[in-house]
Amino acid sequence: MEKIPEKRGAKMKIAVYCVSDENYIKPSIVALKSFKVTNPEVDLFIVSDAIDKIGERVKKTLLDENIEILDPKFRGRFKKSQKWPEEVFWVLGIPEILYEKGYNYSITIDADILCKKNMGLKNLTKNIEFVGAIKDELELGQMLNDKEFLNEEYGLKTSDYNMESPNTGFMIYNNRYCHENKIFEKHCNLFNNLEEKNSIENVFADQGLLGLLIKVYNLSFYQLDRSYNFMVHEYDAYKYINSDIKFIHYTSGMKPWHSLKLGYIRRNPTLYYFRKDWNKFVDEYTGFNRDLSYKDEKNKKNEYKIKDILDIPLESLVMNVWLPFWIKKHEKRGNL
Image (cartoon, rainbow, N blue to C red; front, side, top):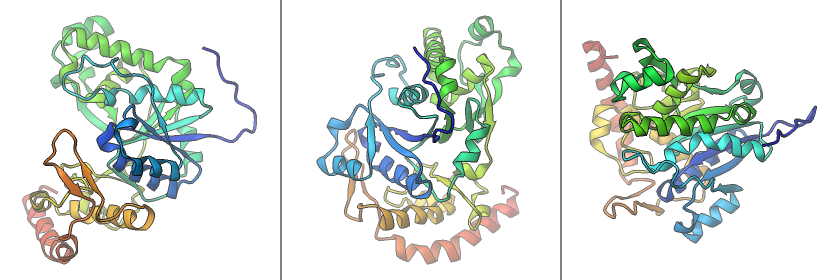
């Protein structure tokens, strides 16, 4: 494959993409739109082979928002995985495709995010040799069945299984590096080797596989600070209510487009607080409204609306009563 020459003084091109099946295309539109509003220099993509399964209204929204559908033709390449949808393993193949389209960097985001601030991408990308993200601690020793195979095949040691891995909710890739080092080919080979040894079933999806890939091939991982991928389910999230968060990641079973689940709010009321940011963005910047229902085709009973009529009366109760009580209780127990 021929290298694409980079012209001196040429404008840097950055693509942002979500990988999605038909059920997540609508939330992906909101996530991508929020990125474009705050970082207008980027181009938007949804990576999917399910465009024929969505309605005409959603197709029109994609056109109106200049979101391109990209089908990588990867279906079947990861079909051996029994635990995770194939699409989660497509992520690492997209930077090389976007490199062919002339993009210098690509950013992959989950559909359950909201971008709130300008990322300063021009300066941020200067530090990215291969990938940049916030770090997660992975205990791969508990996720893999056949460690003897990995030790023999890749020269790993027991100490290697406790590792720092990129959290895949927000990642920046250097597309040229991915292309020149055939990262996706390495990714696929690693997947196939693990699967043949019955180890892939316990890997933490794309994130575990990426962490192992970085360890096996000694790849560069530039660590971003937490503001680039702030996860609302974490118990200290309340400390960031008034902070300069660039990127909210709705990591919990209660997504902002789901009907309110009081059990989640009871366990962690900050989930409700940050949900308001998502609803406000939907009202202000998208054509979606309270009457737009999402349908889960795999479970017809799981239908929900973007907004719930309980939002307004709950705000005062949650923020003025339950959140202070929850914080005080957990601080007293030493949990926070």
